[in-house]
Length: 232
Image 1 (cartoon, helix red, strand yellow):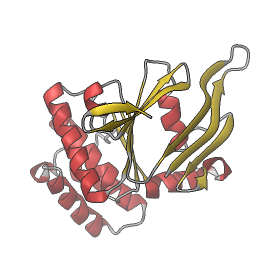
Image 2 (image 1 turned 90 degrees about the vertical axis):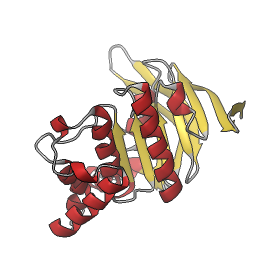
Image 3 (image 1 turned 120 degrees about the horizontal axis):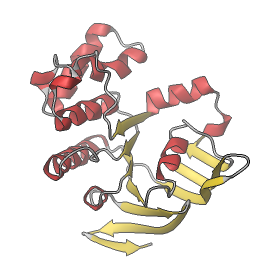
């Protein structure tokens, strides 16, 4: 599903910052991988490279066998629209749209008829426990409800790849655990691949692997089996 080969990313010209350095990482279809590390370790840069929002300085980034650097901006936009669902710490819902309209938006961008997109959005909101909140705008929802709407929007077109950028970062521990269990349920249902950037050990514990970054390099790659992390 995801393959990074000898990937490096640097910023700046006079004073170069090496955000990532010679990263090799393979994530299989259906795997759930948490990327952890201190601030500035390269987690967000890694996520931006995988979704095609940024390009590596050197090396190869492939999603479903497609080399991202070989795509035009329009092609990368289509890839995100058709293959990649994204969940953010700040939810990134459009404030002028209702919950239902936010969830329907990816379908509308794909050319789905308005009526059918709305029908599927309501069904998805029901799936995440928010059927009665479809006509409410984001400022009328709690943080947990907003994140459920964001998850519904991210998975409504059943993307094979789901990216999460601190999806529980703005939530209390109880609500965060509810969101993580929802992601577990959706993963069981859709068998999507999950790449989760997080500082939260609780969130990482819901994944199959934990990849630890430090100063732009992978310093540990652990597989979680029966509640225990075994270093690969």
